[in-house]
Figure 1 (cartoon, protein in one colour):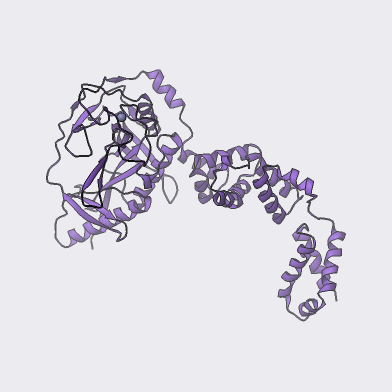
Figure 2 (cartoon, protein in one colour):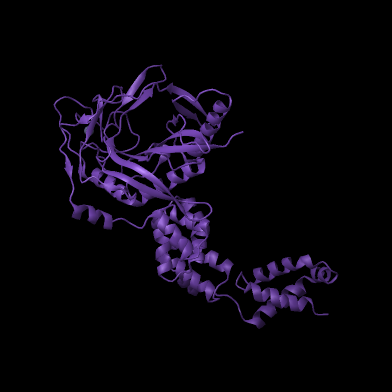
Length: 482
Ligand SMILES: [Zn+2]
């Protein structure tokens, strides 16, 4: 079989994390009774006048800057005209043109599995409004809910010819983009609630050919997994068509999560003509250099830069770094602990181990818990100085988690400190050996596996306070006495 190269373009829609809608004061929220967050403006009633949401414009500008875009210093809104019941005005306010979208000609870097990064060019980042939702009712009728109508929506589109050439790259692009949006506080990134929606378009061409194949578009993918599987499925499906001598049609296809297969929704025969024109109700936007620069300097460190820093300066593994970076609150907590002197790897282990487990059990985020970065650093200090052993540290952490007190304070109060005095440990060892004469004789007759049992007994006698390394050492000496 010939070798085919896939090309994947990505269109991502992100609902902006504003309090109110794009052109009215209705609140933005997920769920709720249908048509309870609507007003004459977002219902598109005649005689109403929309006023743009300044916060939404700012969130899109921030995203455009984080995606290395050029900024349209003059920008306008257009009307995109089409008829559908979820669009009460008969048009969607959007942004048209090559250099009119708030951001254009940018890029996003994704990490390559073999190291380094790959640059994915971005064609435009623009601002528009979301539509309502059509609901198919159990009695066979249809209803429409306009709660979502007029929610600020950002569209991010990759450039052509596409830079993404594998299902993994498509998934990684979406993952990086989602993290950036979460770090910027632009979008909550909840794909399952539709806050972030992805529509890849896919084509394949023979290796060496400069002509791109016919592309198909996948609709409404709502997880990283479905993006990866969906793109892989389309690539296989298109290659099979070509190999069988059948043409690939320009189709819009849906994704069946259960069957892990795409299905035909409609064949595109011609490009839709949306009759775009400038919205006469909305004033042009004009930005000055100082405002854009102040936004640029307000951007936080972005996830990829953080990943590289955690890996290269802090010596964390790729896996550990990714776990910490996945959530900005989590990584801020980690960085605070490291700044207070916590060893990065040990801090990470406490956070992703006991801390994460206990947070999960009670359903809290790190900042909602009683544990602070200083508590973790304090605990690490106790272990490093030999004041407590690993088992005791775990108990102290559990108690600190409940009470919010410093582990060293709890240790002091309980008199919990590690026994490192050799004669004290030898005393314990001899006591356990005399109580377990039968086990000792088993050991002497060659069954050395019983040593672990004896270690356990000694630790138990010391209430877990004996230094385990010293116990091992002294027990070894005593057992091997003739
Ligand atoms: Zn409204």
